[in-house]
Length: 187
Image (tube, rainbow, N blue to C red; front, side):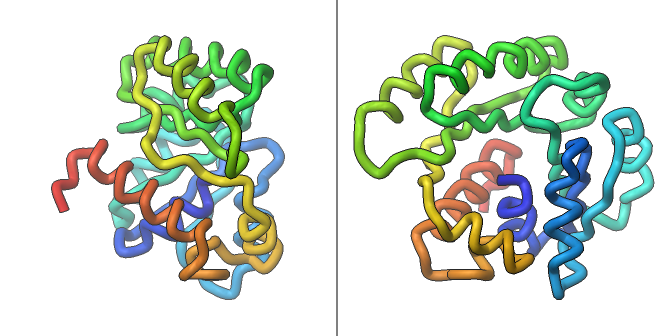
């Protein structure tokens, strides 16, 4: 989700900080023909320093590991908004507990983003009900389980570049607009 948000936010001067040990965002950036958004591989501990040194950038997306790693509290403390992606499955819902603890300890605004959602079925509604019990909002936009996401990544693109009129792109654009509102942007 981080790479897609970073590209959707490109009217800002975006830096995408890849703190995930798998370095997925960095691998994606290496496949890109565009130099934007700027993608920088970093450790969780180096994130604050990197943010201070990126003053020519107006918006940062920080991609973290999908599980708790050392230093993630530093990243959470540096963020203005924490997004917690979650698939609507029992195991993923249970795994959000550590992210919720990190968000609460950081005392930062946070929200859940349901992703890889099936087009039909009760799971999304059920997942919303479970997640809302943590006291954080669930983004009104759900991200579908769409092939366009993986196809775009393989080509070094985001879905808004790969298929700008597709459903996946529409979902990411809607999510980006919602994120901006959460950050206080009135436009």
